[in-house]
Length: 126
Image (cartoon, rainbow, N blue to C red; front, top):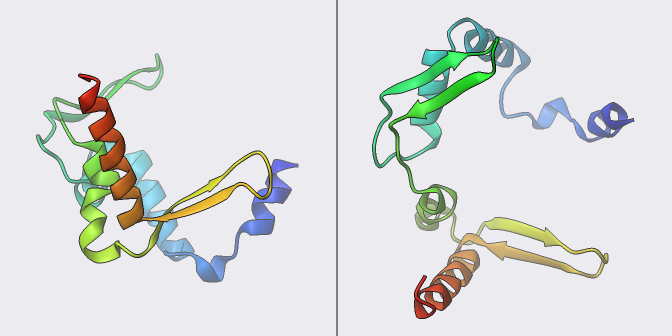
């Protein structure tokens, strides 16, 4: 059932990468996960402190640790860094339980709301 739903919404003409590039990336993620995920992390995230190691542990025992020693600011990566170039683009689409309950927020609007809530927390000593 889920596969039918997913296939219904997939349109390869809208894909950001070709199938060949996807297959190449997938193969690298399996054959050389250290390099692959380091490249992805460098490309898509801004880090306050780089990692000591990308991946440690063992997939067979499920004892895996990613990006040990690294630090980043999740709010900055999700919101703040997009303000300069994408402030008027939709950042969040919220849908409630009822079809009439929806809200769309741009990055600028979401930033304003986040700042307001941060100030509420500061006033509470948090």
